[in-house]
Image (tube, rainbow, N blue to C red; front, side):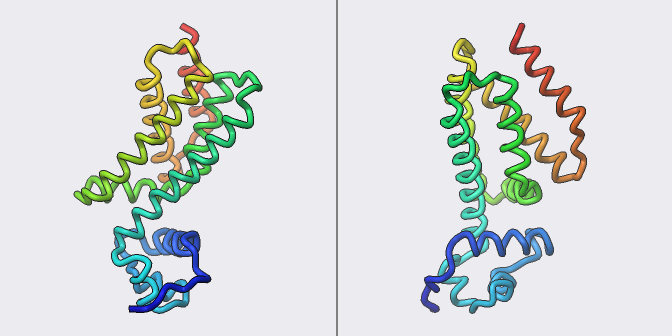
Length: 190
C-alpha cells in the first residue's frame, strides 16, 4: 500500500471530491476518479480513504466543523453587541445555507442516508444534533427568556434544511425568505 503523501491535506481531498461530485454526481465518481483528479496514485487515495463512505464522512464532518466554527466565531465576536433576534436569524440562515452552499453535497448526503447508508446516517444525525445544540446555546444568549430552546433550535434547523433544498434546486426566493423570517420574528414577539 502506498505511503501517505505529506503534501496533501484533508482539504485537498475534500475539495477534489466535491468537484467530482458536482461534475459527475455523487454516485458516479470513484476513488480512482479522485486519484486521477488529484494527480496521485490510487494507492495514496486508498491509504487515506479505504472507502468512498470514509471520504464522504470526512466531507460531512468538514462542513459541519466549518459551519460551527463560523457561527461560534461570529457569536463570540458579537456577544456584547446586543444582537437582535433578526440579526441572529440573518446570520444563521446565511451561514446555514449560503456558506454551507455545498447544497448539492448536503442533499446527496441526506439521500445517501435515506438509501440505507446506516453509518453515514448515524454520523450525519450526530453532527446535525451538535449543530442544533450550538444553535440552542446561541438562542440562550439572544432569547434568554425562551423556555424551549431545544425545540426552537430544531425548528430553525428545519428551516435551514428547507432553504438548503431550495438553494440546491436553484429555486431560492429572497423576497419569500425575508417574509418567512418576518413570520418567525412575529411569532417571537407574541
